[in-house]
Amino acid sequence: MGTTRLSAEGAVGRGLSPGIWQQYGFIGGDLDDPSKRPFFFDDFTKLGVMASATSQGGVITYQDAGVTIQQAAAADNSEGEFGVLEFSHDGTAHDEGSIELGGGTSGLVAISATALSRNVVAAEARVKVTTVAVGGCCLVFGLAEPGAAAADLIVDTTGALVVKDFVGFQTLLTSNSEIDAVYAIAGGALAQVQDNAGTLVSDTWIKLGVVYDPFAEPNKKMKYFINGVELGGSVTDAIITAGTAFPTGEELTLVLGTKILTASAATAYADWWAVGSYNVDS
Image (cartoon, rainbow, N blue to C red; front, side):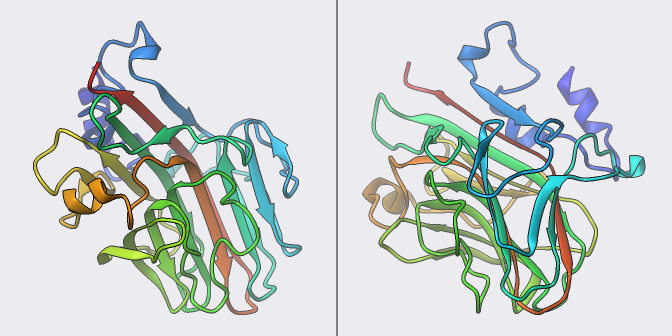
């Protein structure tokens, strides 16, 4: 059922990536008992206009004065959107906007290498930006510690993620079109899994996703995906097990952040995001 639907997308690429969500049984399998494969998907149809630093609809946002996060006014049917969330930057330099699932207090998942606590963990989002010009609009997306959607999630001068518990993707202000796969642990350093792993194209949707599979082949347990295709870069088992550079065992939730460097208006969009996790030891 799911395979037929998802493989028929063509160039639009609207749907959840099969290599993430079907491969690990979140969709297309036994859906009678959702507790067996806990899964959250939000098409951004109900959030409306967001107030900064205020828990609304199960999420919280941070918005500098020149940033508005709200439902997009219109969708282009040719690109398959249903609900779309808009991050509008009015052109004030260094202005930032971010959104986090869980209201700033709750982590939904944890990446664990410990027997009896090992879970498959998956996350993905479909996003785009209106410009990839240097200094335009950079973004970060992935799983981060609760409270990440706050002032200066992204460094003003570089566009890099401020170091905190995180697994996912970033683009930099000096190379806005280059997508890097990264991870970090609070108090440590930002580590790059794969430099220039993908390319952002102006006003073009792209899907960014991650999967942690504790039973995958050695050194391939933390997987990164762009448009449903698994990247070659990964995180070694030793790094995950040690948990001193990687956020092993830390509570994480969905986070998406944007920032501009130069005084030029720019907009980012999120079509949907998703997260899921289930225990593989039980």
